[in-house]
Length: 200
Image 1 (spheres, rainbow, N blue to C red):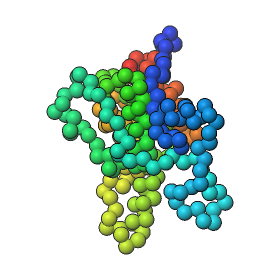
Image 2: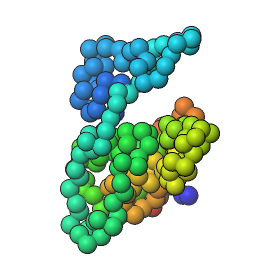
Image 3: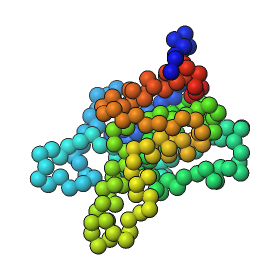
């Protein structure tokens, strides 16, 4: 893809879900005060493990999702049909959608923006869902394995859930390049905007 180096690309909205909780202001306040997000692990059993401390994100629920105003060009008849069921989100997707909604609102954008897409950097995706489904499958509960087990657990679903939540029809990609995934995603998105392939 050719790039127009004369075009400026800016980050106009920020959304954060961190070990300090939900919201960029809470994150910035904690970091500015030198607080640590590391805590004793409580989400799984750590007995016998060499490390029992992590900077993990506290529990989030679908109640933490925030509304994003609809663009004037969105057909209201399609709103219900294009909505995913947040109860089927992996933890990764739920965190990603919450952060994306905050960033979208922070940028003053509306759901259904034309020429807008999603590029996400993620190292894994919905591993929590895959782990639970494997536990179900290899025990007497195998009949309870969800038909959504594969699509919900794959890393590509993260960008898809954001696209559905924000009602976007542009590009939907996930870059999984290890620790640099999110930085690579920002660079890739900037290239696309410079090339005129997307506005947002």
